[in-house]
Image (tube, rainbow, N blue to C red; front, side):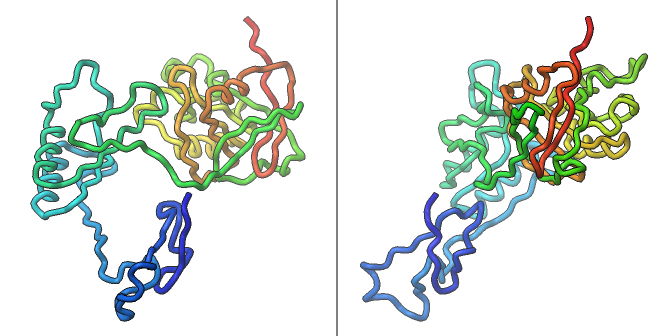
Length: 308
C-alpha cells in the first residue's frame, strides 16, 4: 500500500511495517521554499509530529483508576490525539448507556478538544466482539504488519495445512516422518487433576504421558485458557522441552471459531493454524496415515481413529 519516497534525511528504508507510505508534494511550493529548512522529502524539519507516552497498564495488572488518571493528564497537557489500546474485556450484554467511568472520561477528553481513538477490541474475528462504540470515540480495528510467516503441515498424500510460525523444520528437513498426537488423547491415565479442556492446551507437562508425546508432533487446541489469557504459547514450548516434543501445532477450536495468530519465534518446529476449516483437517484421522513436512515446516504421522 502506498509508496515510500526517499530524499534528504528520509531514506526509503525509513518505511517499515508500521509506516507503510510516505510522500511529499512540492510542485506548487518550490519557488518559495527555503533550502535551509524545507527538504524535498517526507522529512518534517520543524517536527510537527510528536509522541507523548502515558503508561497506565502493566504486564500483570491494570486499574481503571490509573487509566482515567492518564486520560485526564493527557487532556491537561494539551495533547491533540489520544490513542488507547484498551477497552472492556467483553461487549455489553444489555443496551449500552455510556455511563461507565471510562466512557465518561473519554467524553470529557473529547470536550476538552482531544481527538480520541480507541481499539475496537481484540476478540475478533467473530461477530459481536466490538467493545468500543462510544459516539465521541473513533473505534479502529486491530491489525498487523504486512509481513507474513507461513508454515505448512503436509500430509503424506500431499494435502497442505497452512498456518503461521517462526521456526525451523522438523528433524530431517522433510525426509523423516513423525507421529501426530492429540494432547487430549495423551492425557495421563487416572489423572483427575487436570480437566481435558486444560490438558488439550498443552500447558501442564505433568498431565501428558511422556511415552505417548515424546518424539511426536503434538496437537494443542485453542481453548478457554488462551481465550482469557491464562494460557500461552511459551508454556507450550516449556512443556515440549520437558516432554521431548519433536514439534507442535496449535489449532483453532470449534467452540471459539477462527483465531488471530501472532507469529512468534519457536524454539522447536511449530505451527499455529488459526482457521477452523484448516484445523479440522488435523483431526480427520485415518489408520497409519502419514504426514510429511514441507521445509521449513513440519511433518507427522496422523493418529489412528479411536475405538469406541
